[in-house]
Figure: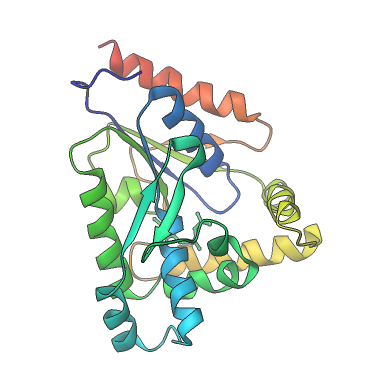
Length: 228
Ligand code: DC
């Protein structure tokens, strides 16, 4: 458990399937601090836009929608629920449709402005593990510890295949590799806060690492900070 006087922000960035979520969850759980999954917030807005039939090009309607949307998290780090406008959307935001469209909605400037603001408010002054694409570069540039996780395309596709299988969706590794590459391309090439490694981030290639090894490598660095 983290001493309340030690304020520790751990930023974890990286592309889809690099191991961010499972690692962030476990590290937050073990340290007893908040786990903030920023991708879930972009997914929630995407879900709402898709449900209402608002295309990502319609920035005015998206801005209106954002003003009337409430996103929050509840529950412990290992079993965090995502709540939007009073409804539990934890499962719905993982659908294939949301996954395929989220890169377009998350590139809309007003979506990023509003969600980054909310992320800073939720994180405000407390210890947390925050995961996403722009955490170490934009959201919490002063984070004490920054990690950038990567893994081979094949390994990331295999991990995604397992996630989808758990939702009852069958997809081939080849299909997933091409979807992952397309999402990487969009996430890395957008103008606003693209996916990129912060200069002071530690790169972790998780291709051949177990979840335990990923967690331990972050905890080791966190402990060094805590015992300073
Ligand atoms: O981590 P994820 O797959 O749940 O993220 C969903 C999408 O949200 C992904 O395509 C990139 C985007 N995202 C982002 O642009 N910035 C973040 N901080 C987190 C996620």
